[in-house]
Amino acid sequence: MPNRRRFRRIKMPPAMEGFKPFGIPMRELESVNLLFEEYEALRLADYENLTQEEAAAKMNISRPTFTRLYDKARKSIAKAFVEGKAIIIQGGTYITDDYWYRCEDCHETMITVKPTKNCRKCDSDNIVQLNEKPVKGKKN
Ligand SMILES: [Zn+2]
Figure 1 (spheres, helix red, strand yellow):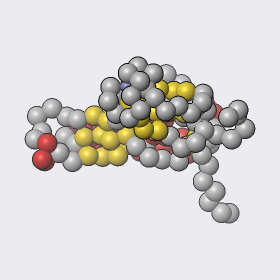
Figure 2 (tube, rainbow, N blue to C red):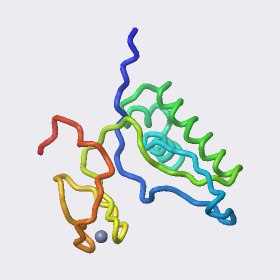
Figure 3 (tube, protein in one colour):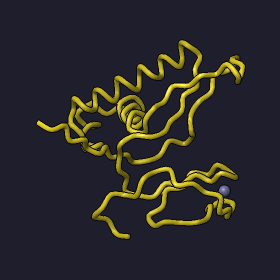
Figure 4 (cartoon, rainbow, N blue to C red):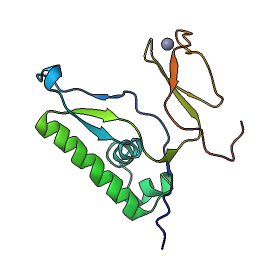
């Protein structure tokens, strides 16, 4: 059977780009990568306290796939925690219902139904889109 990669649904972007540990000189700082869907798996299970079945349904993926993402997220965070590495949240295979942006000037995170060019907080046009295009079948 071909390994068809399903897109994982994510509700909201993380509020930050990652984490940095205290007490490690910047030049020695290494990082681990956390995919957006791994972040979402951890958020649903450990923050929203959903069961793995419920969380998998929310992300539109199978329970085994969810468990894999969740385990990976916990291992990456444990590694960063124990080894004093930074955590960078980026990348992945996922879909969203909205557009996500982050302002490079004031670091505001925006979730919008329609594409936008300016920060809603400081009106800067120095914004970056965080996600791919929203899922088909929705307006705009
Ligand atoms: Zn701004």
